[in-house]
Length: 99
Image (cartoon, rainbow, N blue to C red; front, side, top):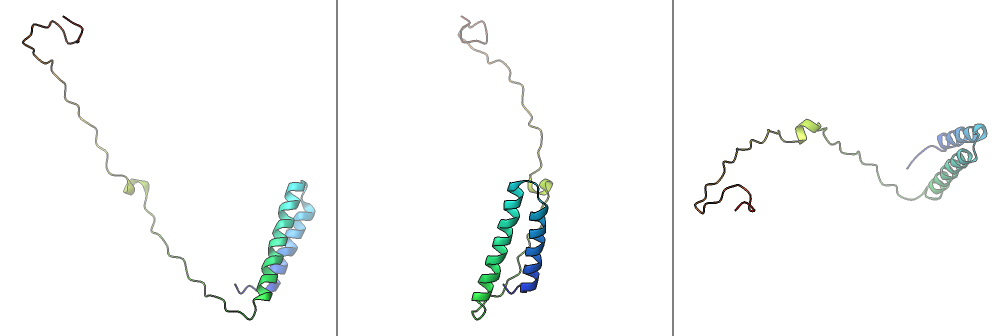
């Protein structure tokens, strides 16, 4: 990454101002941690100043597909009414327990 160190330092100053105005210790820790990460980025960039940096490739965009386009069309299921089966054994009902 070839980020100008002045922009990183300005971001560190903004995070420091947020840390000073924070009321809870958890918020202060979050802003201080952000400053720490920015320091590490700045130090890492300075140590690799002479090394090769890979060019950043643009991200490929994925076309948006709405939920209606993704789901197939739904049709109501038609259920045919079953007619009672005729038996020749003389049963007198639809149940297995009817004798």
